Length: 330
Image (cartoon, rainbow, N blue to C red; front, top):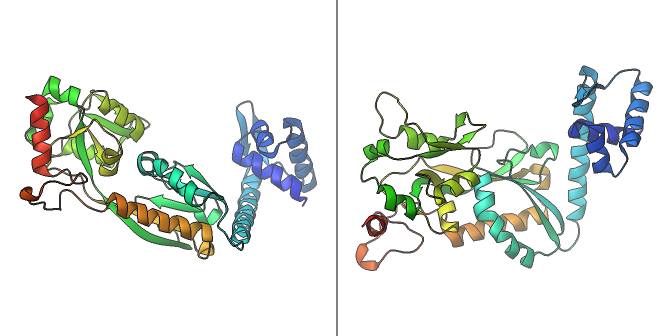
């Protein structure tokens, strides 16, 4: 089979249309269509169902797509390994990342990464860290769950918790909950997926200390942690954010300082074939160093700080948080 035709087929299958595939390959829509038609005629089978809304793989097309996708992934890995034979780390580094960590913590640190390694081009994919590394969808991943697939190298790099936060304006208008039960009288905003499935962190807030498995009703649901943060900051209500988000932004106050969502661990993951990759190794070391500098692995709930020694900025200790809330609602 002709490789150019297979590249056109792979691009069309991934993009879902000849037009989008052409844009990726720098070809016209008609040129891609001709390549696919010639491939189908040579194989004597239809590879796509053509609809007004786009393309859908036939059974035979799906079979070919799996094979071509694997070949493309292997070529991508080979290209990455060839790049790493050079003296200095260079080239694109595709990072599949947890949305909250990538948006609020990692993105502000890419400038420093660039200054240290100007020949590396980070490509930050805010996809939840779900890219298939074995299939070459990304070079590395930062996931907030244990990787399940074989053929990858993983390292736990941080542990984090989430806490309830509110804007000063909301606390002035509604006061701060002194006890968990008082959440029933407050406005709660939560993160959801497609407006239906509640995120685990937000579900913790809605069901915290409720009776019989009942759940509080939120005043708003937002699809994504960035929108959730903006809603909390606007004064809409109380919501749950990972502690590294609160470290990166200003203006939010932690409420219910004794309460914390269950701990979650973050993992740095990469394909075993990239074990010797200079780009991967320097990025891994950069991450570990910046996490240590940010003290992300310190859990404010589990850290005891003697009050006579003061309260470090990175630890929103219970006494300090309570005083901040009292000042706002006074």
